[in-house]
Structures are given as structure tokens and as C-alpha cells.
Length: 142
Image (cartoon, rainbow, N blue to C red; front, side):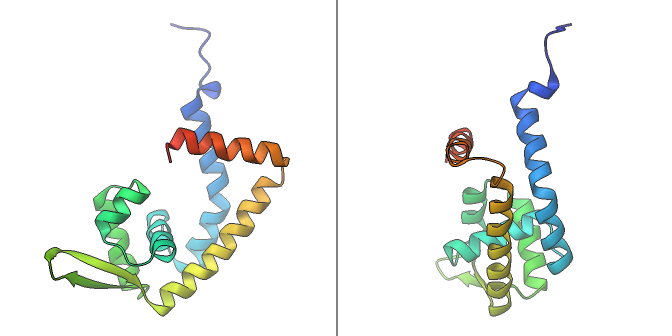
């Protein structure tokens, strides 16, 4: 057994703990306001930011499994936040587009996300903010 290994200093563990802690309050907002799960708001955010996409495009951009995206699309469709239109060139795929209600939800959540992000980043000075974002992007290989 390695007595020098500390799980609390293990980078993947730290990143996971930080992500969970940072996401909880925002999760409370989108869950209570829109009844959404995490994958649903991620799909909504991609459609709101990039416009019309296929589920396959969302999987690639968001790094989400196709089953989770499929469930989120169904839930957002049920909430009338998106429309589906079958692609004529490949009937196995659909274009997904936000409805007016979906756009309103996106605009609300985007504004809340900006405020939430700013509140989190208040604890850091400008250099720390820049370094944190740069390091996280590098780790995520964006």
C-alpha cells in the first residue's frame, strides 16, 4: 500500500469535487425553474448557442453519450422547448431547433449562468481567473 497517496490531492478527484460543488447551486435553479436534468440544460445550451443541430452533433460538441442526449431531446420535446425535423438526405437523423419557449428558457438560463459564473470567479483575482480557465481548457482539450 502506498501511504503517500492522498485521494484529496488526486487531480481527477479534485476536478470532480470542484465541478460538483460549483454546479449544485446552478442545478437547483434550472431544476426548480424548468424541471430539467443536467443533460437537458446542456442540450438546450448547445442549441441556444450554436443553433439548429442534430443529436449526433450535440454528442460530439458536448461529449455526451447518445443515449443521454436522446433522453434529453425527448424531455425537451415534451416540454415544447425544441422541434424535430427529419433530414431528407438521411431519415435516421433529425435537425433539432429551439422553439420560442426553448429560446426564452435558454436566454433566462444563459443570464443566470453568467451571473453564477461571475459569483464563483469573484474569489479569484484576474490573473487567477485567466490561469484557471486556461488550465481547465487545456485539460479538457478544447
